[in-house]
Length: 292
View 1: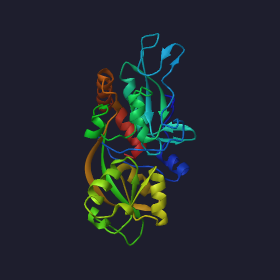
View 2: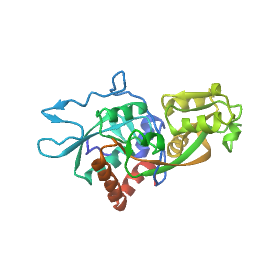
View 3: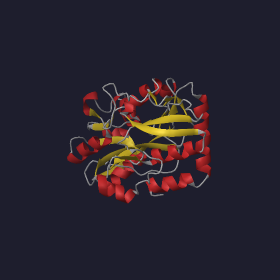
View 4: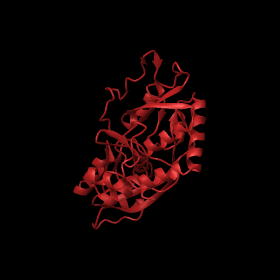
């Protein structure tokens, strides 16, 4: 997205997409995946690692000595990242651009990938930083490094509005059908805290490519509940025929992902996050995307 792109106000966004989005609270924390509508190859990798006009595109110095970086994200996780009228917009987009402005790096572009393809794309140098509401956890830290956290959230359980099914805990999901997005913290909660605990069988769980599809099946009665990041659940609740039954506390934190050997970029992003949070910019971005 062009750095001068004005963020879409939340009311206009709701009119356009009919509510595939999210509302959140100030904090620091985690989620995960989107679908690749705009350009990964069959392996989910973008071909943006070649030299262009003699300069390396990803994290290398150009002829003017400026550190250029390319960011990767996974649209379909409003309000953090989504495509509207062909433009990439969202909280993560605005925040990373503001953070990079506080550093000596130059953000030259965005690549849109499936969530599961982001870490491979980072590893092979096709992108330099991941900005996709990615939860910081030990498994990912074995593969990549993270900036300081910039947002926090828990998991919510969505159900159809006005229905008889009103669970108050994970145990209440017994004998029900449950959905989540593939690769997300929500899916991990289902696998580790619901299926592994014998609350539901593996066959009662459906993994979706993105949460829009999951919520559509929830509205149609195909499944009984969806486990989803809290801020995203709040947006769906405000715009679709679904409601948050309860919040499952996980204490997740979102961070920007970088290669493990990119200590300079990692430090610069962390310092940029601090600078943005200490200024009015963080509050302005948060208010734009989360009605705060």
